[in-house]
Image (tube, rainbow, N blue to C red; front, side):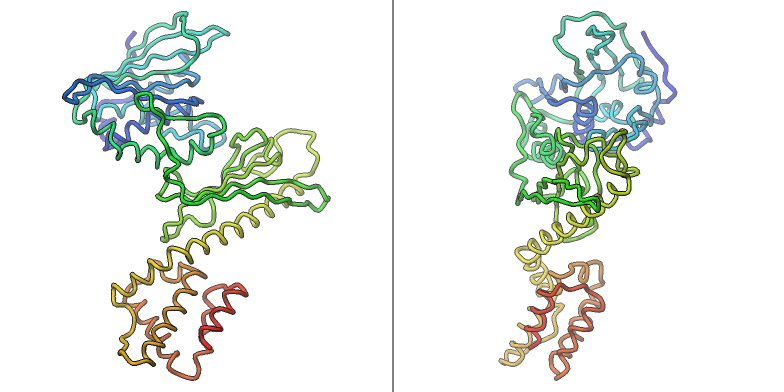
Length: 422
């Protein structure tokens, strides 16, 4: 049965669909996880010359319910996903664009889906052609012998991309960066992405991990244990940097942006927090969504604020450790290569002053990298020149109180700078 939609072919072409085949594949994989799948598989059928005959992307999710077709296929830039009250890592749909994105490199997409209707498994298919995307065709649901629900989209008439590209190390690395954080978040549930039967790995992207736990006490002397798993990634991940809150069943119930999202020091991180505290948790108002809780709304809010403070302090320590061990060396090398330091002669006094300035820059950068981010080169050169002038006078100890007006320093950082200034 053919169905007309509330869209036109031209409107789809001008609506900002993905421009790259690998982004299209990622859209379909996200669709599988949006449908509560734990495994998404991509199988590529090709000949010896690398010509792709078809691409199959299948999942073991809930399938596409027939009564949602007018929303999920009939309305472009609309999606049932956006109506969900919570936006967590389990919902990544982009306004329904994904179902049309196949047209970038395929002439036809066919969805074979199995859903549970009244405790019975029913199967049917949907079809969209590249040249007539304003229409979709679907069959009537029929009883099926399939053993479980799920969806398989078959892309045919593939052009502009070959099998070598979709099986390359570069493509696998792209998927690892896009989905690694999500697979790690759900590793205990066995989530995976497979290409021609081989699961992709993301462990190579992890640079540092740490696990810890702490207990937070409320004013009513109730105690709540939080188990924290910190990860620093080698590259930017396919998500912003969040605290992910998991309930006692390790299911993500909410997430909160960390305080370290807008930085230019390559500090790519994720923090996973598991606790029974999040059972029934609602981030929108920080109150339990069920009645009969053991503590008041006020108590939960207090515990939550304490939790965020603990997490921020922990993440700040991790960032400073990363900056001291890796990022500061990169910054000092950049200053030298761009010739931003004052000119120094080869005399012992000049070289000593240069070393002092470099040590001072190092401590300032560790204390707050933002002091050197987003500033014009000429201003940095002038800033360092003034510091160098003060180092040549008997008033160099006054540098510390001036710095403290702009950069918050810990006692240890303050003492380090004091020793540098002599």
